[in-house]
Image (cartoon, rainbow, N blue to C red; front, top):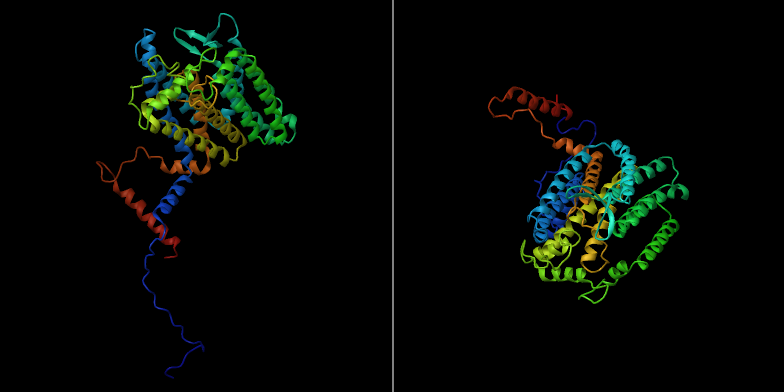
Length: 454
């Protein structure tokens, strides 16, 4: 019959499809930019690029500023103007090799190196106190002469030793679930750290001792030390530091120079601190120009080492100093990100220890130049002149790079971006297009089969 329906179901009326209209984004341009930056910030390789790029930029900028700040000092010593720059450049080349080697080492090899590095550092730090071997520089007995103008400061390698050995020790105790007991939390980590501190303080270098103490506290904090235990160790260390400061007129004078704006008469003349402020104040927004510093002409002591940040502010201005601060902030964030996203206990403790080391030393150095902290005599990491400080720091940065590469998501992203060497591009001379076209057709066929087509 015409008009009859089979099945008794009413006809289904399909709604006519309207062409999809592109929705105009109602997001504010600033909000859209923030969303894109947030997505880029959360990518797997962000920490890897921040560590690699930030450390290299700090090192290169440091080489430039070492060359600019050390010329006058070299000429005053009847040396070529590029003398200190050439030594720092050689140290940077060796440090670059160490950084590359450390970034390619597996985690197991890093853990295996912990005990040899600790034993070597303790031996060299004890050798410093042997008469005829150790050297005193600026009143601190913490150097060993290697012949000629080359010297080594073993206490700088003590920082790396404490980070690696402490991270390996805490990781092994974490795997055995022993960190819940306070004796396993403290022993033998704290006694060995106090051994290193004692060897350093025998030479009178309290600045390096402060950095080593910061590394110890960072490891204890990452290990989950209870608040009472952490506060107890901090109180003991603070009392020891207070006694050491009270019993030394030189340290008391440095403490009295916090916030000084003009030189004083007597022991606490504050000459270095005040002229560091003068250098920063005369730099202005964009500085007086590279190489045009006035304070480095004999007014500012240690212009190319401990107070190179002041020369940077005078020659590159506020823009230059903020750039340096931003690079250190990026490096610190990347280190914290590596430590926070890993599931390997050793990687977490080692990355946290290295980050604590670099950032604490940068804060102490920059705070002293700004007059906010006492002058501790520690260099700015990767930036100041000094091969003994540069080599272990670059090796430590290589550790962070290796840990950032070891993340599963970062490892997969790096594998996808690796270039395929030895394969010729299509269209080039001698290129074979047959296999490339066959691969393309095979890829299309597999796509068709996966979508249900026959």
